[in-house]
Length: 105
Image (cartoon, rainbow, N blue to C red; front, side, top):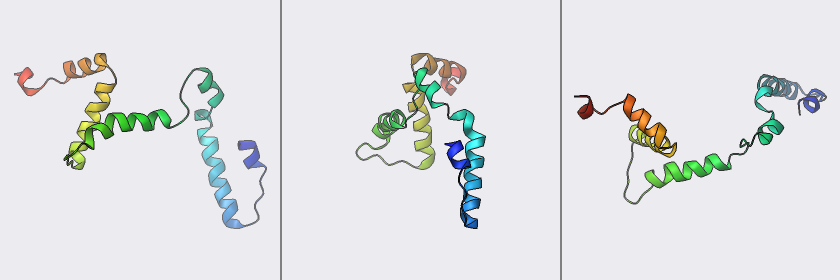
């Protein structure tokens, strides 16, 4: 992609500026775009698993019938749901490091 972009020679000034911005972005983030290595390691490169997790972890909790949330409350719930979905070990470790006021007394 970078080679193809570098071969372009736009004539309009605004197009040249946009191309330079795009080239700079690709050059600065090239180390994050080694998709063949990611696939070989079994790492996800698509957004599907993340979107599914959002629906499962967040949507199921925040969009129930009659539920009303403000931003601060939904943010806190999202953090707890993500922690819970990360597994029992992380959940327990978090609560060991952050005891409730009743446990601390």
